[in-house]
Image (tube, rainbow, N blue to C red; front, side, top):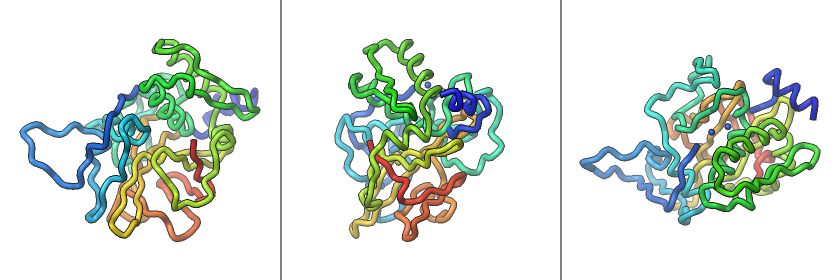
Length: 258
């Protein structure tokens, strides 16, 4: 544990504050004229021609993620308010506060989004994260928001990419990828990104979106696709074993699910 906290202090560990509940899948691949501007949320990210959203049942994690607000300003800022040096990795910035501490890094963003969804759906008994030594941090405070924020800080201090990799279940067939899954390479440093949405065409070919945080703690953001700008920010299931993101190289074997 001392090693984990020391690494946090040195900002070597890979990769925290407020989202909104979702109800159903409302995205359409068609543009519909409207007198009112459409809300700037994840579900309005345009799809490549021929693709439609994968069905997301009401109250599912997938539906909730589609209703995350996006900021008009696409600048990624660090926890201290300064501008991140690399501004070429993000397609959009998610409108969730980072906090004033260097805590909400990569795996912390994944855990934050999962915890916020469960908190919004009042599934309090499902909010639990494990540290690297197998100790569980279970949320037991009901709808107490202030206490929940303190709980998240504790989780981010003791859990990270290495423990998240151990907690989640490996996905042996990458083609079974679904919204909410996680690409995670545990380590000090390690990295983790969340599969935030899925689309499919008539041939059954799938696309997915990725969301990440990074270190130092910074705004969580939707990643561009550096290898295929024609469909960016969407990703195809790769033919090789590599899943290349702007700031990390994953393998298909790194895919995990809750």
